[in-house]
Length: 112
Image (cartoon, rainbow, N blue to C red):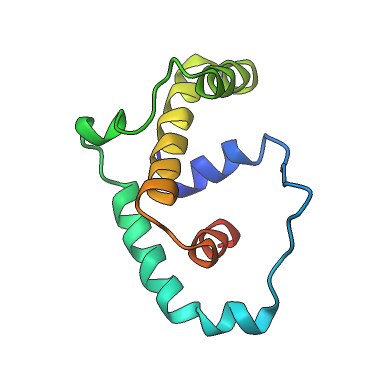
């Protein structure tokens, strides 16, 4: 699944933020742009990595969140597209949570 296709599917879902969410100032984002750019490149490279072993690492489709995400995606885009979307979403989740992608890099990636 390429980036544009993932973004198109992601845009079908509403944005949910915690009550204590605060957008960072532009100056703090610019200060981190160099390291964020490198992290984004690493993230995008990993995005295209389709190794089966990393597909299921750190996530379990039996978990309620992943089940609910998959069911909701199936209702919106069909089973085949939902499966691709969920795998891509899990990959991004693993990269963000387990490999320490910075907030700035994730935000810049999502805004690109």
